[in-house]
Image (cartoon, rainbow, N blue to C red; front, top):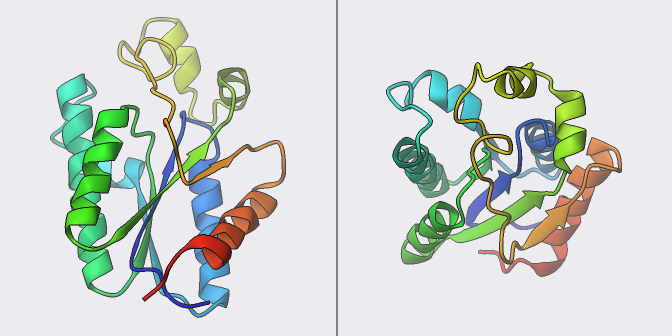
Length: 179
């Protein structure tokens, strides 16, 4: 497989499986000889974006910064894999436009896991805290998540994460124009 000049952007609710799929996709790409880099929204919030909160303005700035960091990796010859809730269509479209302006592809991958499944998983205990009111602005419970209007790939997590990552890799192999 040739190398895509662009970013893979996984979006979905907390607990949807974005990070797990991104990690497996990273491994599959490595097996194909493709240099990729994982940019996890949670990790960037601990460092680069630690000054941001969770109101709408800060969420938008968080996504803008993630998009800019992804473009730096694109310029360095990597295929960044971004895993971030990124709840607003307008923010994802803004990142898509920045990529387009820079001659890079933006592959939006919607991890379509139902809220009930995400809540049942609740790997960080966040849904439980949101339901008790401890977390005021929690996506999917007290804050909106806007489903992508036309993502390049929609996956669900009723299959295994490895099957889902392989589905994304298949999309890349069959549909992306590469440089």
